[in-house]
Length: 144
Length: 144
DNA sequence: TTACATGCAAACGGTTTGCACCCGG
DNA sequence: CCGGGTGCAAACCGTTTGCATGTAA
Image 1 (cartoon, rainbow over the protein chains, first blue to last red):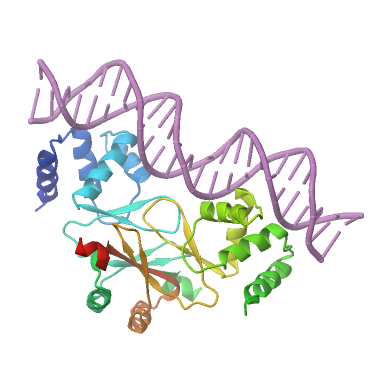
Image 2: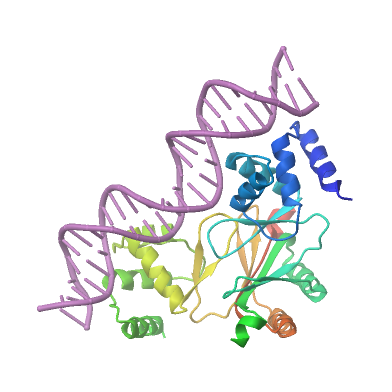
């Protein structure tokens, strides 16, 4: 189970005629080390902190590959730089983002998935990915 | 009706101790000249094309003000630069974005608004704004 | 008259790229 | 061995900012 994502990545690279280098392995392992949002800069420092290494250039290049094979998806945020999260082994979900404390609440809604399907059918649109985010104030921050 | 947005903007500026300069008026007028997405670069050239002028710096500064007073909102997109649309006089809506032809289909859904409310209530979250976008292939592009 | 705004050009900061060297298969 | 990969530093490009000058109220 733990190494499933590596198997997927390895096979994807192979099919593409690419190699699984130690940098790519380090990035993959860090991306899957815990669930949550991250950005390329996070990754750069966390990989260093673990005594491994990969340049920023390799991180950006590898993230591109991980998007391509569907192991990672891009999470859209208001601030200007890209955020990502790994998706293998996780149901797709949406986000509530607190404008005060920055907390991200994950949201799973069966109803939302259904509604989404309906809306696509109505427009005869084939949906490949979606983003649903609400910004506002979380329980704790509202209390203050 | 036509000049309602100017009234709103003027009053907002006044309250802030700011002035309605001709550059700001030109930007406002261009932003409201038709409904749809635009980015700062679009705006820059369209304003020129109409024989008015405003520097990029003023465009960025003015967009900030328009966001602040709620006449414009930021639309999130996958590509890296910001997109906006004016919202005064329009119901909030969501988007279907075609990955092939780039077409943006507007979506209005009462059910979605309701669902959103429910989800917020469940988490005791006060929603200030939301984004819902689906990316995929539109009717025409699917046919090909 | 006097803040506040503007335009310009330089600075910024995240991301991409060219290139010489490196290494996985 | 060799084609793809890496790190570095420079290039990119959308956005922001400092500053001298212009202008709305």
